[in-house]
Length: 101
Image (cartoon, rainbow, N blue to C red):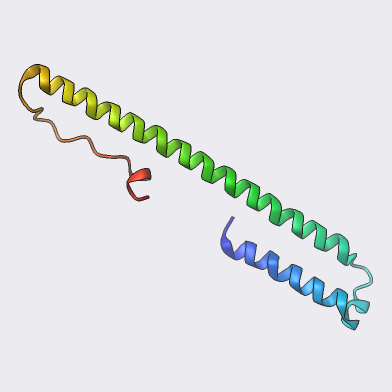
């Protein structure tokens, strides 16, 4: 979820808190402010959970790709050692996902 959306939810929570503490909250009788606050807080918690899950998946994928890359390099080095010469093919490129981090 974009950062702007999270900031927007936080801003809504602040507005609702302010309205609940002032006289302006009286004009919002049809809105259950505590319930709205709870709903928005739950959404923020869910966003944080999903973000953590996505980051964990990305980290796992990065580690898997790195291990595969290193295995390819070892296999290539072993073949070069057996042949007694360097492989003429282009060098294996590292995965983009973990080379940036």
